[in-house]
Amino acid sequence: MRPQVVANRRLHQILLSGVVGLSLFFAIQKPALAQDDDARNGLVAELSDGQTTVTRVDTRLSVDSSRQPVDVRLREVREIRWSGTLLARVAGVHTFHAQLNGSCSIRIDNQVVLDANAEDAFVSGTPIDLTGGDHEIEVRFRLPADGAKSRARLAVFWSSPSFTL
Image 1 (cartoon, rainbow, N blue to C red):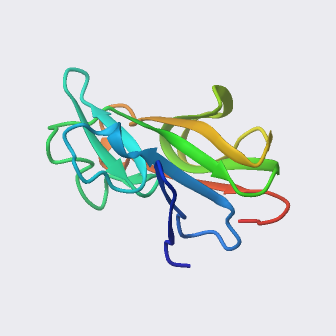
Image 2 (image 1 turned 60 degrees about the vertical axis):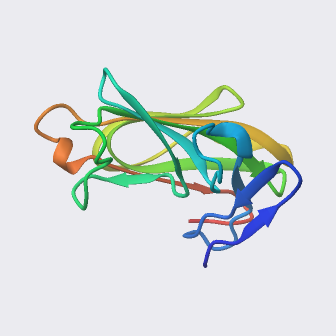
């Protein structure tokens, strides 16, 4: 499934590929990045080395440091925080999952739905009943302890009774 872009007056939303029947969209408001006049679709990502923070827009909730540097502007990324708006196109129970090497927490409308610290594992969070419409999302990923940073990995997935992994 290829990404599809859907726009309305204030939000640009993108369907992330990878799950058949996916009914969730991520969105950012155009003014989210003042230095980026042409804000792109996706989630705002803040990457930190503990002293410096850089910002970008990511269209995917994933990182794999074994394939390429997490961000060339930082010598060593320690933490990434993604935030934005999640549009549930269909109301119902959704479960968030992560393929993980590091620690990850996912909040929907300020409710923790997944909190895990794992080494090369697939983890599932607590199901959440979402109404149709917009929901705030925040994902925090902390890279593994020194020595394992070269294998930092996160990929976020979600499922519901109307679409499975």
